[in-house]
Image (cartoon, rainbow, N blue to C red; front, side, top):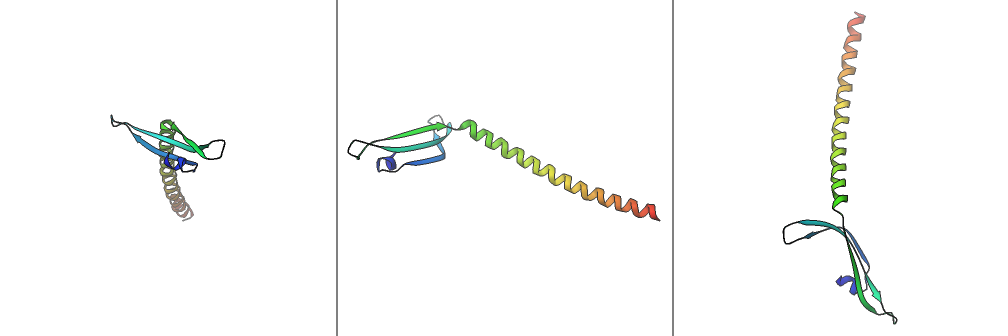
Length: 95
């Protein structure tokens, strides 16, 4: 808000507000100065938006991405094993 009163428009997309009961509320903040008729700063406005749900979704997405990456790596490992087994089988069949 101090920066808005100094004439700056700003946006912060991932701040935490710590409440007295130790609850943490993630917020997105916009602040801007409001100019009067003469063009001077009369006051500032700030908007705080609770982004708790968005943060939960981002964490869930990151967890799913990590799980998919592990599954991909396991699939690649098994593909190599299968290729090796097929090569051995082919060598045995030819002899």
